[in-house]
Image (cartoon, rainbow, N blue to C red; front, side, top):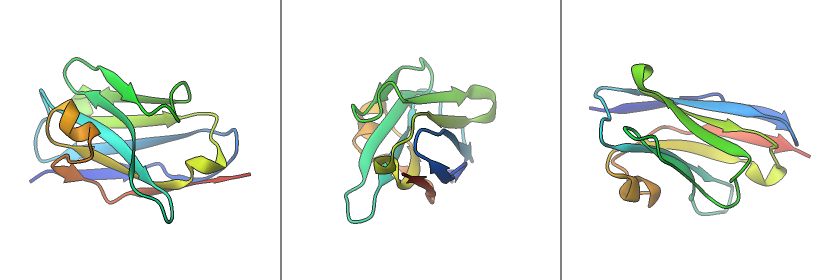
Length: 123
């Protein structure tokens, strides 16, 4: 059984930075992908970023490109989301997801999901 545990959320002022972490336990992810989604109050869950585990190819939503960076630590089976130049519209619960190829994870139908971590950006 795979578990994804997120951490690093919090309250930050606009223009600030946060780094989210997602640690995977239970198995390795060689050949698979991991990613991040977010859901703001009253809105649908939306794609933020994803990465192929082996090759490290990255993909971003247009709304976060050039501000957010997804990365991984292979030895710790952990994926990170560095968020810079945060805006109030980035406020949401951020979810880590994994399990499947990049197309599946990026589409929001990965096999595994974390519990979510709240990010609040004040203006």
